[in-house]
Image (tube, rainbow, N blue to C red; front, side):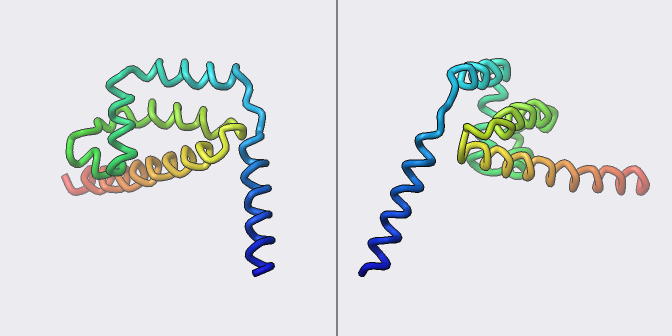
Length: 116
């Protein structure tokens, strides 16, 4: 019982520390501008990508792969700011998924060039 109480107290302290990270208003405004610059179509594509994944979004025609660099740039803006907490980690994970898709797609494009 004591171990559970200590673990709960440590968890509570960690949560309080995590949520007490100061976030500058300039950072919020900057990321909002970046998001706004994407435009509503790319915002919708990005939502779809997060809902069903990169590859599935592209295969289903719900995400045009020409917009991946724009989405990646936006996610890099989030990833580069340590004050965004967990969103920073999620952005990094999403970037990795996009890059995995791009790398796999490059390989298949190279193979198709040699086959044709």
